[in-house]
Image (cartoon, rainbow over all chains, first blue to last red; front, side, top):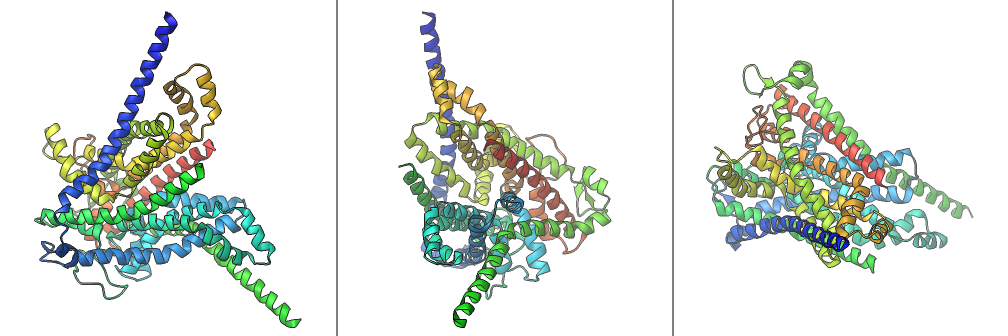
Length: 288
Length: 296
C-alpha cells in the first residue's frame, strides 16, 4: 500500500515537472515566433515594390530603402572579403600545423575571448584604429574591417570543426602520393571541408548584416540616399537606418519603420536558415 | 640533375613561406586582442591624465557636458549591473529549464525541431529586438506597474534575458549531453523516474558546464548595446531600482560618441569606459572558459 502510494507520487511529480519544463520551452518558442509573426503582420503591408526599389527621400519620411539595402550588402561583402581568407588560414594553422603547446592554448583562449568582446568595443577599436589611426575615415572599408574582426571567431571555429571532420586517411594517402602538405590541404582537405566552411561564412554574413554597434562610428551614414562612390565613402545600412528612424527622427512613418525591420529580419533569417539547414543535416547524418 | 635539385629547393622555399604565412594568420587573434587592448588604453590616456581616477571610479554623476564636466562611472555601472543581473535571473530558469527539457525529457523529434528554432533567436538583430521592446513591452510595463515611462531597466532585462538564451541553452545542453549514459542507467536501475534522474543525477553532473553557460550568457548581456540603448530609457542618474530608466556603459558609448570632439576629454572618457567594459567581459569569459574546461 505504502509502496504503491509512493510510486503514484513519483509518477505525479514526474508528470508535473515534465509539464512545467515543457511550458518553459514553449514560452521561449512562442517568444521567437511571436517576434517573427508580429513583424510580418506589421511590416508586410509596407513591403511594396516602390519601397524596395526607391531611394529614401524627404528626410526618411518618403521613398524606400533600396540604397540602404545595397549599403548593407556592400558592408557584408567587404566583411567576407577580409574575414574569410584570414579565418580559413587561421583554422588551417590550428588544425593542420599547430602543435599541442602553450602558444596554441593561448591562440585558442584568444579566439574564445575575441568572440566575447562586446560589439560596441569592436566599434571603438574600429574608430581608433581603422578610422583615425589608419586614416580610412568613416567608410565602407573601415566598417567592413571592423565587422570582419567581429565575425572572425565564428569563421575560425566552424572551419576548424569542418577540417577536424576530414579523416586522417585522406591526408596520409595524399602525402604518400608525393604531394606537399600545402597541396594536400588545398586539393584534398579544403574541398571535403567546404560545407562546414560555408556554414561559418553564412552565419558570419547574418551576424554582420544585423550588427549596428560596430558600424555606428566606423561606416554608417545618417542620411545619404545616393549610392557610395568608393570604398572610402560612408553608407547607409539597414540596422542603423532602423535605429535612426525609431529613435532620432521624430515623425518617421510607422510603416517605413516596420518595413525596414522586416526586410532586415528576412535577410538575416534567410542566411541563418541556410546555415541551420546545413548543420541539421550534418547532425542527423552523423547520428545515423 | 641540377634542374631537379633547384626544383626541390624552390619547393622547400615555397613550403617555408606558406608555413610562415599560415602561422601569421593563426596568431592573428592574439594580435587583434592585443591591439584592441592597446588602442583602448592609448585613446583613454588623455582622460586618465586629466581627470582624477578616484572621481572616475567613485563618482556618482555622469554629466559630460556640464561645467565642469563630471565623469563618474557609478551610475553607468549600476545601470549595467541592474539590467544584466535582472536579465540573468530571468534567463536562468528559462534557459536551464529548456536545456533540461530538450536534453533529457523531450522526444528526439521535438528536440531536433526546437534546437534550430533557438538558433534562429541568436540571429535576430538587436535593433529589431529593441524596436519590439520599445513598441510592445514598454507599454505593457508602463501600464502594469503604473509608471511614467515603460522604458526601464526591467524592460531591458526581459529583452536581454531572451537574447542570452541561445548561448545558455546550447552550452547547457552540450554539458547535459556530455554526462555519461551509465549515470542515467544507474539512476533508472535504482527506480528513479526520468525527472528524478534529470534533476538529481544529470543536473549536478553537468553543473560546471551549466555555470559556464550562464556566465557566457552574462558576458553577452553586459556587452549588448542596441537593445539596451533603445529600451532602458537612457537616463544616466544613479538609481537602484529595476523599474526606473537607467543607462548602461554600452548605451553611453553608443549614444554619446557621435556628439564628442575627436581627441577631446569626453571622447577619451568613452574609450575609458570601453576599457572597463572590455576588462569586465574578458574576466567573465576567462572564468567561463575555465568552467568549460573543467567539464571536459
